[in-house]
Image (cartoon, rainbow, N blue to C red; front, top):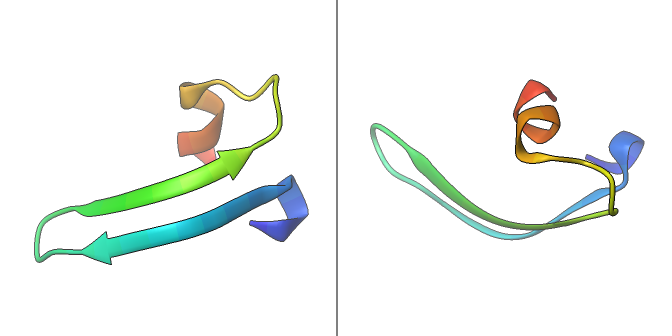
Length: 36
């Protein structure tokens, strides 16, 4: 995350999915974020 200037603020893990609250720099779209 640090390599791409993404800060993970909080997260929760379930057996079949995750929830993350993140902060990232302008210019990254949702598609770009999911590729990391």
